[in-house]
Length: 277
Picture (tube, helix red, strand yellow):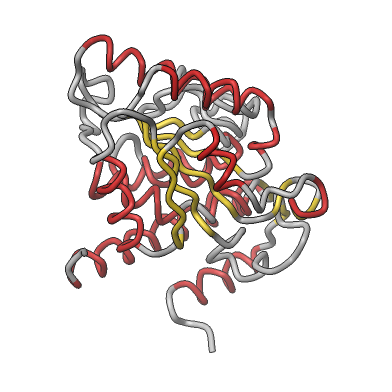
């Protein structure tokens, strides 16, 4: 269990990342706020407490790797990297604009700290499996972490990669499913019901846990347990809230990509930072 000071520090950093994510999307005027905000806690924990990384040397040999397969969550990944010092924070105001280093979806050719280009759903997860296999073949004492979406989990490529990772006994691969129960066109339960996602992963012989994806203690405990499993990959299913921390987007159906007005930007940040009544 994390101590109180660590939790408070992580919570403060998660708020910073959420504020930066709202600011960058609002500056553009619209963007993928829903799935970006729902993964902030796991991003915060990985980059500020878990991974062996060096922002001054993004290509450091033997580092841990992170692949955001649900590439539309790029804005929160960028906010995390900027807060961590991979690039100047003013880059965030160039999100998805001409000449930017921060395109709509993560691009390893443009953004320091991005380990693999993602966006076409399912492909980032396959890449993460390949990265983990490469680490294993090289004998590296390092880990690959990756996040997929629950809507993305309807892609057949996810399950082909899952089968391969299991067959290769990739114990150095720890994956997360952002189970926020919503996707582009609506609720997953109305499109392809994913409520049995736990048993699906168990069926592919993965080590499976399910936790509150906004609880740092549960995230820490789940990663510790996953690391203790050496002979197969791990899936940690995160029960999350889409648009978590963006008050105008929480609890509504159409929150995958949203226009953000200046008024909603300021209101949401005020709620996050305790200024709203």
